[in-house]
Length: 107
Image (cartoon, rainbow, N blue to C red; front, side, top):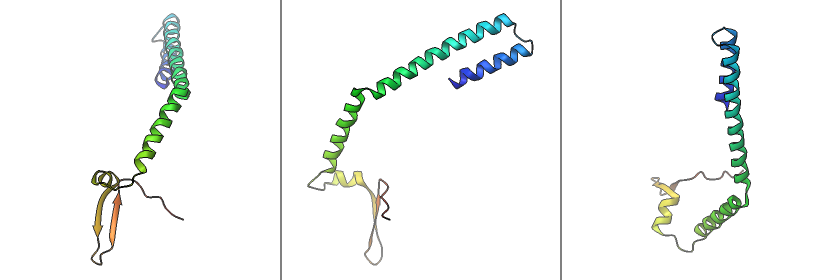
């Protein structure tokens, strides 16, 4: 949409510089306005789809599946590799765990 708006500004400059006629300017503006209207309609349709109940249900389903993954009784090698990038052990035996996600900061 920004590209089309910039194009409209360029048409004004072309008209002002005498490069295109008023008739060519009007035709170009009408075509650009039509394209802008179509894009705005598509944008509104997509926004409506995003807000629809289907999307909300899909998100809830995904959330439930993720919660099932997080509620595990046994730590398997696969789960460990998904959660932890690497483990380093200092000379004094203290482990440093590098997770694949950012750890929350406790204040």
